[in-house]
Length: 287
Image (cartoon, rainbow, N blue to C red; front, side):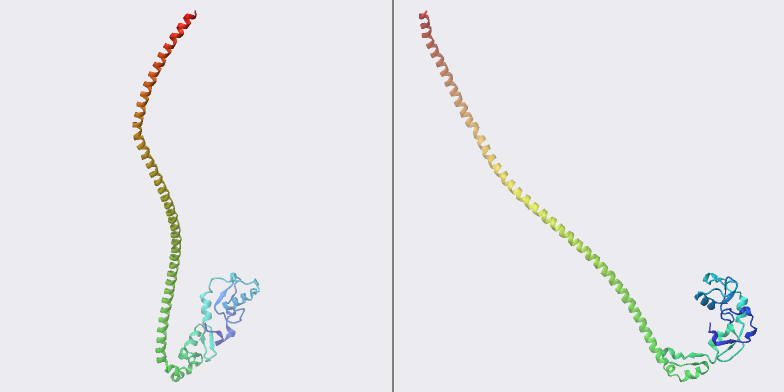
């Protein structure tokens, strides 16, 4: 709503007191009802609450808060009566204007209402009453330059759109680069882990290789020992193969010796018998 400073009420003394705000002492604007039953301008009561004051009503006198405001709008009849109050424009002095249509009067027909030149957006600083607006626009250099300025603005706007598009593409590419960088970091981390694992595997392989070399050396020594044992075994086997011949010779010698011993024993027995004969004769003679 246009500020009420642009108009004054016609026949203000005859306005119904029930339509007067008790705070600003003027006819209600955007009225709102409080719980105690009084009606105030919305801006007036909200400003009043902001100062921490009590309700203006002498019957209420409670500390105001948003809880005191009723959510229900005022009756349409009250709004209609307020909109039909007669006002006079303080700019062009036109009178008998309904307050509800005063905004339209200011925006479209008030000859003294000051407005901007349409060339303000391209640099014109003119700000004057509506009744000389047409005269100004006919002589305004900015308006004469408008066709060229519009072309330049269009070019600038297209460039701005292109820049925004490039910025979006750049942001998207930046995001993609960030994602790719993150993926590269992840792959780098995985590669480092794999490199560490590969180093560990290489260490294990080197250890296993050393163990295999040691086992190979031990196997070589065992092979040499086996070869030596095999050589000894072959020598023993050759010696064993020669033993039966020697044993046969020894057995033959033993048999001959046994015959000789037997013969000697027979001879001894014969000698003992020959020796016993004289002894028997001596024994008989001694009797």
